[in-house]
Image (cartoon, rainbow, N blue to C red; front, side, top):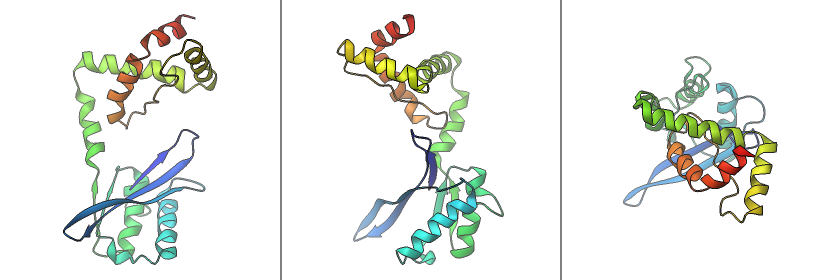
Length: 181
């Protein structure tokens, strides 16, 4: 279970379910819905509970929850997991391995960290400012570039760092022209 913000700054709750089917386990996207107001544990649980009720899903079927470890998810009193455990008495929880890995990567070698930090700064300078983003797209279209947009990197999405670096390297000439002009 994860709460994330999309490119339009809309908070989205995503829940992936893993369940036994025939002779193996399957994973499917159970829920992907916008959070109407805030991203508190109460709101997250409310959206999830409404979905369970509408689709006649029993809380007893929820035996394990894996989240990013934010307070909204793991808060002892009002976190989503605490509220889930009130409904699903046998439910256990853990901190997502991807987020643990992201925390471990904070100790990466300085030279690699420096390159990735500069990459993120350049991408976010272009991508997070609407005018810059539009101008970069226009530049790419004008010179016939294969890439007219960059991948926005967020700190917790450590897996996107490698992709961001590749996507910055491929249009490096266009990025150079954009930054110079």
